[in-house]
Every structure is written in structure tokens, then in C-alpha cells.
Image 1 (cartoon, rainbow, N blue to C red):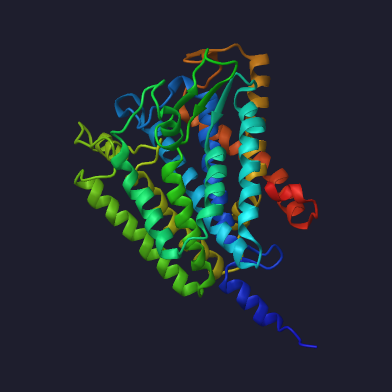
Image 2 (cartoon, helix red, strand yellow):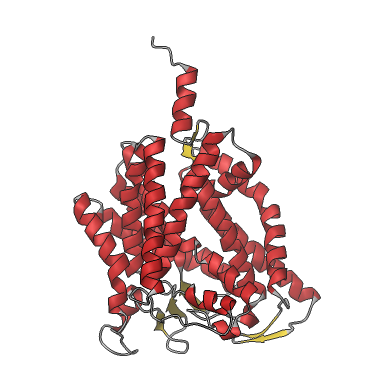
Length: 401
């Protein structure tokens, strides 16, 4: 019988930045956990600061800096989710498991969750079906189930074209009722598939699909980085991150390409910075993706190096625990917000007028940060418990959370 050297096993786990007990890559879980906390902040904003609604891109003359930069932080979430979904798909395949049926089943489950549990959690009702980030991740997984069979060079060209080239399609628009409106609304221009009053349930596409397919394809290709030695992978992450940011500085700085609205010098330096960083999310512009994915690469490298430099610190473990059960946390925090808001309405009367009618809201974005921190602390323990349960359970349904 061959004896496994514990020291060798430990060093290999360290080189891969992997948790021996969970078989997961800590830096990826930590990255997910970090952006999930930013997502929580943004969803608290949408629950209690909706009377100070932000447009896309934001109207800097009507958005105070605290709200602007809080929203800008949240821009990180969707690109990281979609990219790391592609990375995880590649790593799943490397364990000798069939990727196509996995992606098909997982994608359909995500779409079903978006249309049921997630949608109800947002409004507490079912008058309008909003198809948002979980929907688009599900669709991306369905398409990746087919696309991953293509040669890697062709996938790279396809991913780059979708991410970098879709801005050229912005002038192409369809009005409701025109032939092609439905398809184009799903692919590129968000809007109502069924407007209020046209059917019993209105349907709105909030996340157009086309550029996100490019992001998940690039994530799938980047999954191979996690089969390389740690030093080589970190050099790739470092160079890729800075290349993306340098490209952003060139394109955005000179107003060459990649964003719908050019930036301009404003009356103050702060307003000028806000205008410079004011990117379009729906659909995500090239500049939006260069910023978010470039910073993601640098953050992944930093998180991996922090883990390898010493034993896992408490803050690292907290982020990894949040990131190990992303769907569970996503649904849990939405229903926690719905419950807390409903309870608050029993105590306090609505005090703000919004486009959705009278609502209960706070007066400043500082309250949003405070509520988000308190809620993150409260939801950490159930999320940590479920992450452990997910790893040890033989029930198949838990894998989808």
C-alpha cells in the first residue's frame, strides 16, 4: 500500500490555494463572498433608499457621492458572478464529470428559481416578472453547455467579440410591436416583453444576454489558469488585470470607444471623477467590464497571495464561508430584507414617495451601510452552517445552492 505524505498533501493544497476539507479553491470562494457582501449593500439600498433611485448610467448631478460610489461598488457583483460561473464550469469538467448535462440542469434550475422564489422575494407579490441576474446566469449556462465543445481559440474569439464588440450594436433598436423586438430585448436592450396591462403578469428583461455570454465564455477559458502552478497563475492574473485597466484608461480617457456617453470635465474634481467612472450596466459596456473584470483579476491574485502567505485568517474564512453557499445566501438575504421591511411597515408608516408608490425609506446612504453590516453579521451563521451542510450532504438538491 502506498503511503501518502501529509506534508506533500498540505503543500499541494497550499499551492492550489485549496481547502483540504472542502476541496474548494479558497480565493474563488473569498472573491464570491466579497462581492456578495457588496450585493447585499446594493439590495439594502433598493429596499430602503428607493426614493433616491439611480439611473443607468447614473445622473451625477442628481446623485450624491456616497450613493454614487456605493452603487459603483455594486457594479462589481454581476461580472464576477458570471465570470466565476465559467471558471467553476471548467473546474467541474476537469474532475472527469460530464459538463453538458450539468450546465443544462443547473441553468434550468436557476431560471426556475428566478421566476419563482427570487421574483416573489423582491416584491412579495407576483404582478411583474423581473428577469435579472439569476436568469441571465441560467441562460449563459445553457449556452455554455453547447459552446464549450468548440475549439478554445474559437471560444476566445467569440468571447472577446461579444464583450468588446456589442457596443457597436447600441444604435440598433426596436420599438414594442416591431418584428425582432422580443429577441433584441432578450439579447441587448432591456425592456418589457409584456408591458403592464398587456397580460395578467408583466414580464421585464433587466439583464440583456449577449455580453454576459462573452463573460462566461472568457471565465470558462480562464478556468485553465487554476491548473497552473500558483506563481504562474498569479502572474497571469496580475498582467490580465492591469492590461484590462490600461485598456480602460486609453479607451475611456480619450473617449474612444466602449461607453455610450462620453465623460466631460465637470465643475469639481469629484464630479469629474464620477463622470469618468459612470459606466452603463444594462447591457454592460466594454468599459464597465474592463473595470470590473480587471479589478477582479487583481483581487483574485491578492486574495490567493494572502491565503498562501499565512494560515487562513478569520476575515478570509468569513469571506470563504459566504462564497461557499452563494445561492443560499442570495435567496436568504432577499427574504430577510422582505421580512424586515414588512415588519418595519407594521411599526412605521410609509414616509417616502417613489415611482412604485408610498414606501418606507431612510434619509441617507449611511443608514444603508449600517443596515447592510448588521444584516451581514446576522446572516453569516446560517450561511456558514449551510455551506458545511452542502459539503457533507448526499442530497442532490443542495448542490444547486
